[in-house]
Length: 200
Image (cartoon, rainbow, N blue to C red; front, side, top):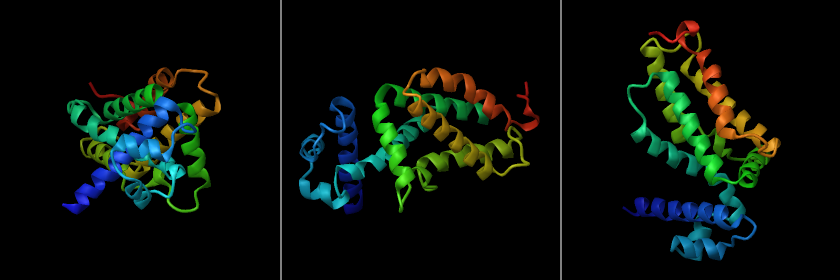
């Protein structure tokens, strides 16, 4: 039970922090604001985080919460490629509408400079577990090609998503992230379909 409470406390701090980062900006949000919004204590905050900057890496946790939600909402009749397209669209729509480009750019830059844990590459994340499950099922049911491993497909998909986010930030959001990914990601993923053609 204490472990569950600990997860809840940390989760409340993370959720409150990203809500405030979005509403009032990263620079304007203080540790005191986060503590107040999360209804925790400063002691609890510093038990989990060295400071506000340490929260930048937790955006991966926010993404994983979204994936947990999408698992329950995703139509099970979709094939593997369609599931990956759906996940990509839903996550990028959340980013486009709820994560500022400044925060996303900060996350990407901290991951590039990080000497230790790189949250975006953590294979134990819900993100990677879900992708491996979809890729594995897709191969077992003959939907996805098998001349590449499920891990190869997952790695390529994750790299594709990071590239899209990096380019969007690099271009200063001059184009719609969702519209672009909706037009390009299906074409990218079709190359992993068995025989390269959707079976009727």
